[in-house]
Amino acid sequence: MIKILGVFMVMAAGISFGFSRAAKEQKKLEQGIALKRMLYLLQGEIRYGFTPLPEAIAVIAGKTAEEFRPFLTQTAKQLQSYAESSFSVVWKKAIEDHLRPIMIEPKFSDILLAMGETIGYLDKEMQEKTISFAIEQIEDVIFQMKDQVIRNCRMYRSLGLSFSALIVIILV
Image (cartoon, rainbow, N blue to C red):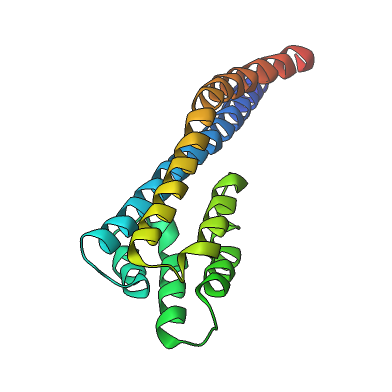
């Protein structure tokens, strides 16, 4: 009876490990899509709402994914308080404080850092083009990741099952 319980526990642990790793891989893709959506919202606020950049960031903070809200709120507050000298400094500090710890794929935060270097001091049209360029880069990364994420998810799930079965066979 104890052996059967042990077998089930080992199998459950292996399978859950495989599924949790697969979920982490899937989260990479979901973060990229949420980031792309956030940039589309920012671009729309600038283009159609004729909103200045600090106000546009504050507006989209309530409309984006929960994990990006602290980043956007800190950026908007810093920009509206005029405490820092430039947009790029505020943007970089907010990325380092809030996005780096939660971003699974570092390419996404690198794209945002590059966007922040040029967007803060440009006119409306150039801001839109800079955001469009960042969106294109994110789409490229997502496109490259899609097949790899699907393969890795399948691999992690099967490895979790296989290794747990192997451990059960060795122990029994």
